[in-house]
Image 1 (cartoon, rainbow over the protein chains, first blue to last red):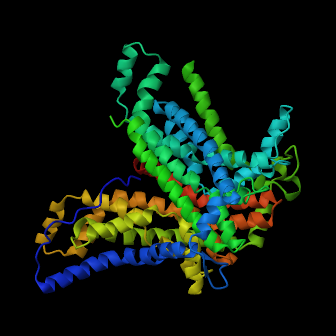
Image 2 (tube, rainbow over the protein chains, first blue to last red):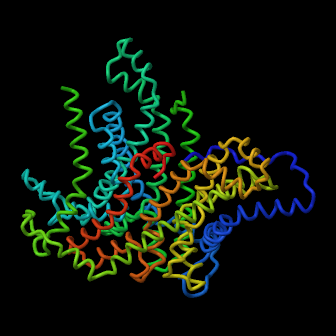
Image 3 (tube, chains in turn purple, cyan):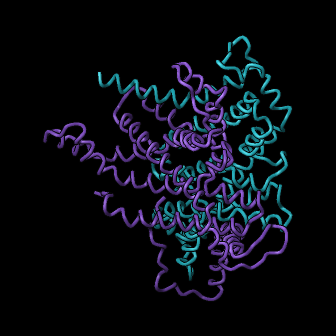
Length: 309
Length: 268
């Protein structure tokens, strides 16, 4: 999704119309716009304002709100819970992003050249992308079941003892990372495959003629020319990574012992478990601010490494 | 030699992608007593549909499936209509403040659902709308992303086409319906696929707003099922298998188009 395009410029001079025609034109515009403008106002803009307003209050969703100004934000910024939640989220991203990028790139490179059944393989790799997070989380929770899961049974076959996966605080996050990478691998592959196919064959051929070996061609030609696709994957994956929720909520609910309490899980629990809606709203805005800053830094920084040819 | 090695890697990878689905099917056919045994004790002779029967006994599964289906279709249709109309207005109808309004639309695109969930819940509660179909559907009636995507498509329709229609005496509604819409069909199809998938898979909002099983959608129903039957994995897998089927059928039909759309617009 590219948001770089500037909004359309209003023409300097509106066409002059007689009053009756002007009214008709205004009506036409209203009829075209209201079906989207009213829902956006009711279900996005007003809740946005509501969320900001709530974040300045102490509120348990039942008794009247109590104004606390910026205390919620101050409390969150100083709090141990917040640091832990962002820490867990970063842990997720640090595991998920390299895994899904390296895997996706490897697959894209393999499928980039003509091979028998390429379309079938591409469709198979993409299958988990269209499956819902809840189903993916359930499939993997069962595969990684410590006592009766098939994965630990397979590990047992080679004489080792499998870990407790999502029941063990040390292994719960890796379990979530594994399931998430499995789901999104096909998505990253498709994006990178499109990028690879846009690289002119002549460049690689020229490098080969100049005596570059396979690794040098990959490192010096393919990777730099693929950088716009890489940039896109990194930006989208970071945004999604910071907002990770579904698979966490189904696989661990933030546990065990809070080991996978990511930011959105925290927002959910603060609101619906602990009745601390003000803090929850403040936390959701902190998350939004972090995502915005991280994304802006990347857009700014892309000049240094993204090659738009 | 290198080529054969490549093939082996690709096939192994495909098996890794398919195995969890296959294992879900196998588990769902395993009788209750054998599910938790290690090593897995499964012989085709024991296979049965007991887990599926139990699934249908314990939750209104068909109703939940039907909910997911019609909500996804309704949300897609709403988004197609509202977004294409707004896209036409932003691309073709000059009016004062158009640029500013479009910027507001774009701004709503950046606010994640997590920020909106609490106040949306309060809003619905205030109007006594929690636990209704309307509440699930409401936030998906309009899509700023759709407006953005379709506006670009409308802009690519040559203006001469509209002008020819104007000469024939057509007004904006006829130009929109008879000239522009047919010409932006590929963009509409792309957007429809994303809209359907997003609704079909959405979990956080239904989780917040729905309590009664009769209004649940599949992701919520499945997560609930898992909460109730923590050890009956054959039932949970049966539910997962059945819930994957419709999207799988759709995917098989539209596979090439889905993949092309993702590659092109980079969304899922």
